[in-house]
Length: 401
Image (cartoon, rainbow, N blue to C red):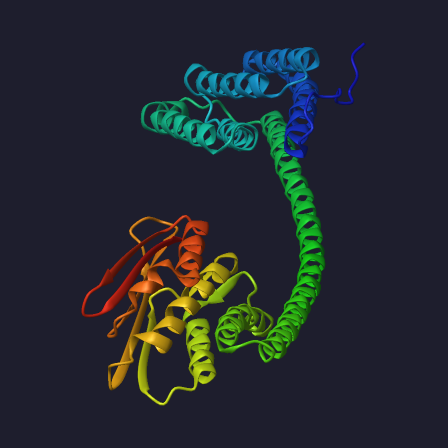
């Protein structure tokens, strides 16, 4: 049974539902009003009701297809093409009329196409109507004006009524567009507000987690300092050789404690300022060994930050390198020199760490625990190491960070 109310469509999107309801209501309005116009003009010899009757047919066909398919896309194309065909027919087949309202039907068709089918279809129909109107102006308008019949009062009512039909149709299209736009604005504003609220919650949670993580780093650093103190106390009970071993272990623990100290003082927990860390570690090691010999240490990093997950192996590698240089490499030199360069590797996700000094390491150090630790940490970072020992000592690491 036919109902004026739009049937339930197959769409869930508000835009498609709005388009479906628009073409349904538009078809009903046009069928009713064009039927009235056809009845009024059926006895008027000056005007033909053919185009109005054809318009009623297009509207009824649109309603039938909409009711069966519950989709608007095909019907929109059908109505746009049908209206374009009727406009062309009115311009070129109905003589002795200036076609005041026909151009308004053209405007209605273009607006309808833009709203229902999108800008590309809209531009195409706009161009088509412009071409038809231009041809009419150049080839038919003058002849129609010369052969116009005498204007009578019933003509005024006819023009007024048809103008009202077109105006109502255009008003319905624009109203539906405005309502849809407003609904979308409300939905966007609602989504934006929800996102703002969620971002505020996430920001608060992140700040709380960051505070908690910094507190964890602080406590770990304190615990490592306790371990360092215990190792130092234990070292006093052993002989000189054991004291050296304890000292090396203490320095390794201190290098990791320094990491946690830097982390809880840092503004970012995800990335680590490698140059600042290596500089601080070097300063601590120089104070630990308290040697009188002058040592120039130059640390340069082309990479500002690296992942905090990679800094522990790198710190242990660096700790072993600089400890051995300070303790053994400069025995026969008046002045020691250490250079460190950190740069990006040609392979993405890797860095190159070059460590060199102007001293000469002991041969026995190649089998020491320190070298084993360096090799182990290098493997942990999926890296490689090359060593040059001639007049100077140079280590080149390729590390995945």
